[in-house]
Image (tube, rainbow, N blue to C red; front, side):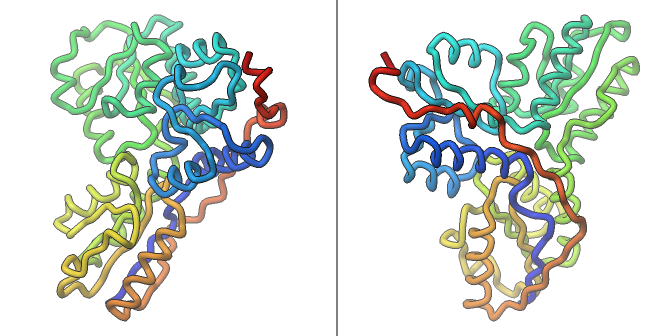
Length: 317
C-alpha cells in the first residue's frame, strides 16, 4: 500500500492561536477555566483540555460570577459578550481573526443599510455568532434552492458573506445562483473562506485522483473536515471521517493500493501519526508526504491573557 500524506493538513493559524491561548490561560491560573462551546471542533483537543480541568459550557449561566471565560475560535454574538460583562467574567477572546473579519463586514454592511445573505450551515457556532451581529439584516442561505425563495428584489441593497469553513465548490455554486438572481449584489474585496480551508481542499482534490481510499482525521462536527471527506465521496472515492486510529477498519482498505490521508484544520498531528502507524503495521504502507502549498500564517494570542487573575472565593462574591 502507498500512502499519500497531504500537506498542508491539520491545524490552521486560527486553531493554533486558540489552543495556545487556552494552554497559556491554564499555565497562568490553573484549573477552573470555562470555554463557551468547544474551543475548536475536535474531540481529541476537547478531551485533552477537559482532563486538565477546563469546563466547556453552552450557557454562561454555568460560569460562576467573576469566573474566567474563553470565547472559542468560532466567535460569539454581541449578546454573549453582553451577558459576560453582566456576570463580571474575565473574558479572553480566542476568536479566529478571519472569523472576526466576517463579523466586522456584517456590521459594516448592516450599518450601510444592506440586507446581508450569509452563506453557511444553520446551527454552526460561527454562523450563530455572525448572525448575532446584525440579526435583523442577515438571512442565512445554505443552497442554490434557498436563493430562489428569497424575498428581495433586483433593486435592493444586497451583500453576501460566507462562513469561513465552507467547501469552495459548494460556496461558488450558491454565489453563482445569488449573482444570477441579484446582479447588483456586493461582496467583500477579499473572500471570506479562509486560506487554510482552501489549501486543504485543494490538496485533497489534487491527490484523490490517484487514490482508492481517503482518510480524513477530524470530528463529525468539524465543518471543514466534513468538506474534505465530501470531496473524496463526490469523486467516487471511499472516504471516511474519523477522530483517530481506533476507528479504522481493515475492511475499508480491501484491495486498496493508494490511500490519501489528511486532517481537518482542527485536528492535531498526533492523530495523523497514529493513523499512519496503523497503516504501516497492518498493510506495510509506504508513506510519501505530498506538499502542494506552504503555509506561514501566525496569529498572536490576545492581550487579555496578560491580565488574567486566578479566581478566589472572594473574587466570585
